[in-house]
Length: 76
Image (cartoon, rainbow, N blue to C red):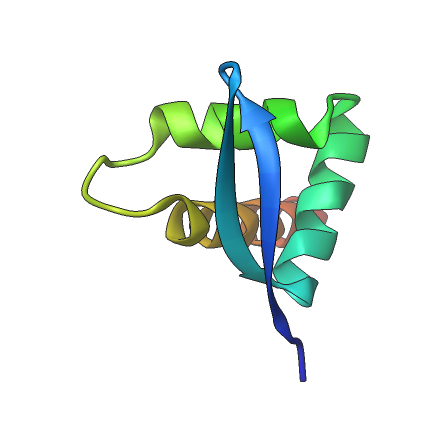
């Protein structure tokens, strides 16, 4: 079972925090590595594009889900 952990990052010049299960955070790390960007940059992108009625943690989970789905679709 993946444990939820609170994490902090600096985006747009200020600290923000989010809570993610380890499994989702591992995918975030993989996405950033694949795209050759920092984790903070990836999180900033997700933060900028998210629906303001959702929280950052949820937006990050959705982003990782979409990444995995697209990757699986490309393998078919």
